[in-house]
Structures are given as structure tokens and as C-alpha cells.
Length: 161
Image (cartoon, rainbow, N blue to C red):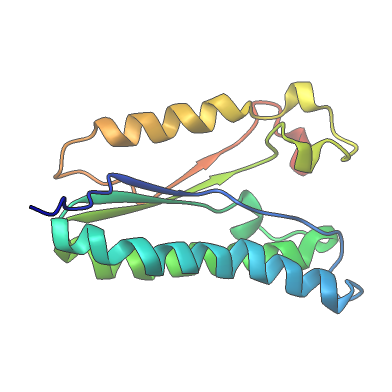
């Protein structure tokens, strides 16, 4: 008897950021598109068929607050994260009929290696563990409830002024 594959969760988290909008170098912009947007798509393309067949599962795509509120210093990054947000909305609508949930988490600054070179204090950023706690809570919801998107913001929102 062959063992059926069962996938409970796909968490798309990979991402890179480069500074710039109109002046960003094409190779940096292409790298962000490949990692932030295409990387997410390829995983969804590979895993969604299993979830559709099993009629359950949760796909969490890590967007960004920059994918909702673009800033001039990171316009290229924002473009990729707007893509994640838009794709996730369409994916939610497509997969809901199969019982598969799709959630986009849009955090502000998270204290990771990616933000370690920023001028903002990492002690005032969102701890990565808080994102893990959000995913854990999403997994606890009944099959009847989905959180389509959630925006996480540091308590000291001055980072975005």
C-alpha cells in the first residue's frame, strides 16, 4: 500500500530586500522578484495540488507592511510584496472552495538578519517568535474560520514616520 502525502502547512517566508525604487539596479530588482515573488509561487504550485486533493491545509505567505504601504526608499521591495499580497488574495479565493486556507502575514520591521543593517533599533522591532506564534494560532482555528490577512506592527510605530 502506498503512503499518501499529507501537507498541513506551507509557510512561504524567504525574502530579500534592496534599497531603491527608480535607481535600483536591474539585477537587484530581478533577484527580489525571483526570491520574494517567484519563490513563493513555485512552492504554492508544488504544494497546492496536495492540499486541494486532501481538502484541507494552510498556506501562509509572508508579505510585508511594505506590500500595503509603499515607501520611496524600498519601492522595488514593495513591488514584490504587493505581488505577494495580490497573489495571496487570488489564491485564497481559488482554494477556499477546496477547504484550503490562505493567509498573508504582513509584518513591519522584524528583528532578523535582513533588517540588522537598517538604521532602526532591532530591540524595537517585531521578534520573529511573534510571527511563529501567529502561525501557530492560525493552525488552531476551526476548519470554518480563515484569517485572510494580518498586519503586524511594532508597538513603537515611529519606525514608519
